[in-house]
Image 1 (cartoon, rainbow, N blue to C red):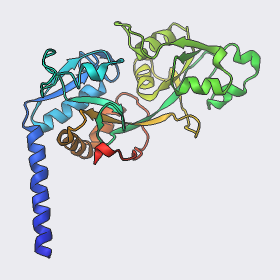
Image 2 (image 1 turned 90 degrees about the vertical axis):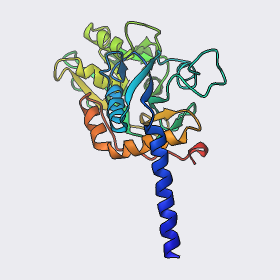
Image 3 (image 1 turned 90 degrees about the horizontal axis):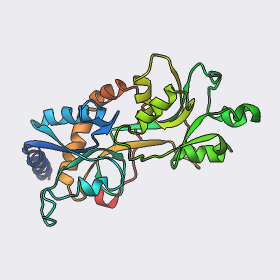
Image 4 (image 1 turned 60 degrees about the vertical axis):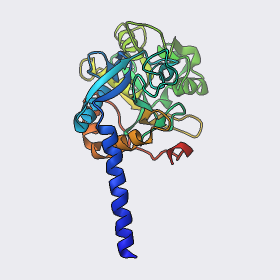
Length: 289
């Protein structure tokens, strides 16, 4: 019986090694990415997703190859699930194989284990009369006269807008689009410009984007106050990598790379001033079996 168990373990190990080889033997680490989406990815390859892609490719003996496309509605359809040749819809070759950042459990892809978790934060420019704010809830308790002087960015959707609505502050929001279609600025870049121009004084912003604003500003320019999730509004999310549904060999290879490089990934992301939380375990999905 013991010998049989050893044989089973050995065969499982050999199968696992074969899966790793079948993916890593490819020449390219083919990434689907937005060319203008700091701090995630840029055509200059200076985003944190670019850095992690280079780390993984190097360990697989591959080179990174990008398919660039704006990360908006239709991104997965135009990249990850798009045939290499547009005219060949039955092709088993695709434009790219990996999306470096998707919500854990994302419906449009098979997702890896999460490799980071962050949260929305209340980002406040210092020196504009709001330095006494230490908790987002204080904004809802301010005297009406002071509330009316708020200049806070409000997106067309998202937990920040839900929080403003719940706390009766929608009237003080300055509207922004979550997907602007702007080919010169992504959301983080636009928020940075408008904060500097004093068009807004604060924003409830996703952690990596807030980290970008801080990275591009003089030291100690902002207060960063993490938003706390509640049963009504969730602010923190685990982020994974996405591959095509059914591409389980590639997912398993990425899972192993994520586990083996956890400290290196954290180090890369800390260089971008991203607020990081302990990673929560996502619920299992049927296509993850």
